[in-house]
Length: 166
Image (cartoon, helix red, strand yellow):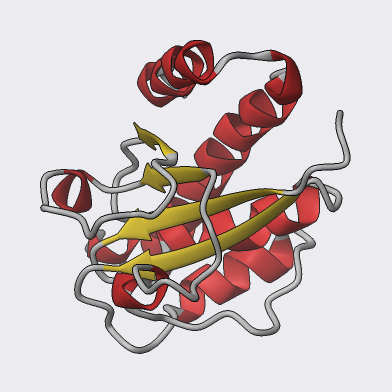
């Protein structure tokens, strides 16, 4: 892999669970080749405690995670994104801000574990399952020879990852 650090923005509506988990996981799994961020169109302002629990249980760092608006990443002085990936169907259907630099975009649909009803164990199992699904997609992303692929070829690969049944 080249010395380039690829930046990724994971988007979700509330930025409290799925996008936060993806951010934390990719920052660890990317081993310095990726810098991940997350944001929401209507952020809740808090990270779901079950998401924090799942991230920590999987062995990933939880420090610095916070629920934030995607507006933070639409300004000229914001980090330039190489990839913008929506992780919930609601955010994928929204009109997103303009992302400078025309990053490659993709949609990876994950069920919202925060919307699961049931016992605490049911909810905890939902967070664990979605965490595993996110990790599987990130494993696929990290296996791609990103520095060798043309942008359009990478777009097709990211779209394919998004339709992979996990």
